[in-house]
Each structure stands twice: as structure tokens, then as C-alpha cells.
Length: 220
Image 1 (cartoon, rainbow, N blue to C red):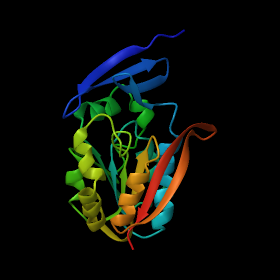
Image 2 (cartoon, rainbow, N blue to C red):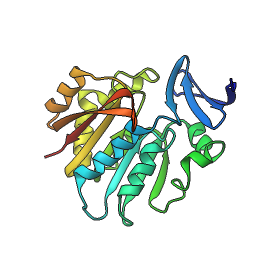
Image 3 (cartoon, rainbow, N blue to C red):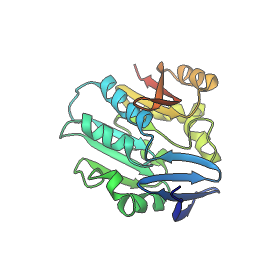
């Protein structure tokens, strides 16, 4: 059995430690005993971007915000669907995750970070949301609304955070939220915030695996 090798650690603002591990060609990012992401399991993160792009259609000059760089699955899927005049901003609050993407996991990320349509925002995605004028806001932060790493993420998924996200979207824009598990209270909050809500189940891989939940909330 190939052993796991620890490549790096990073502190999460507000508490907790991320660990980057490698086993052969496989990478994983852990928080304590919880595996937050694995380089073999990209299906639902790709679906997050692909279905968001489908929902906003072929409008020109798309501005998309992705909350959480992770292993770059969502970013790469978005770039593959969007046109040459798009702008994709990726917000990542843990600097080491960006360093890992440009270092030991460079092959996983490919040329997504050097794509001229990509801009990396090192900081809290809540601050980037405040820029406004987004066609799509994609949140893959802390395993979803019932996250485990940062209590502060509640302000993204609470009533006030959803109201701010709605205000930051252009008409017809989409707020897409990835979660490791369903949440009826969160779906209710989205509707109460004035969104038209579509809840989708996506699998961890193209062939199956764990069932993840994605909410696509459209601003009228």
C-alpha cells in the first residue's frame, strides 16, 4: 500500500488546520479527520460550474465569482464553458491553498490560474461579493451551509448573506451553492431571500460515488 505523504499544513482563519497529503498521484486536503477534497473526486464540483454556466446562457462578458479555490475543479470547468471575454474571479482565504495550487498541485490545476480570464482574490469571498455586478456567484466554501471549519461562514449562508449576494447579482444572475449534504432550512432561506430555487443532486464522480447537493438560486 502506498503511504500518504504530508506536503504542507495551513491555519484556517478562525481556527483549524488544513493538511495537504499525497498518495502516489492522488492528493487530498484534510481538516482534522475530515477529507475536504480529493483529486480523484471532481464530479460535483465540475457540475457546480457547468450547470451555473448553462443557467446564465451565452450572455457576453460574463463575470463569475467562485468562492473557494480548492483543487480548481470548478474553475477549470467554468473556463471550459465560458467565452474569451469572460472574467472569473476566484476568492481563496487561505494563502497556502493558492501556493499549493502553484506548487505541488500545479499539474492538477493545469493552466487555469494563468488563463487571462482568471483573477485570484486572496481574501474572504464575502468581500469579493461586495464588488457587485456578478452574473454568477459560485460558493464551495466549508462543505456547505452546515460547514465545519469556519463559524464565520454562517454570514455567507444566513439571511443577511443571501440578501447581499442577491443584490450583488445582475438580473437573471445565479447564486450556486455546493454542499456535502442536503439542508431544508437553507433551501427555505434561499426562497425567503427572493430567489427561484432549483435543488440538484450531483455525484462525486461521473460514474457515481457520494451524493452532493447543489442549489441554483436565480435572481428574477
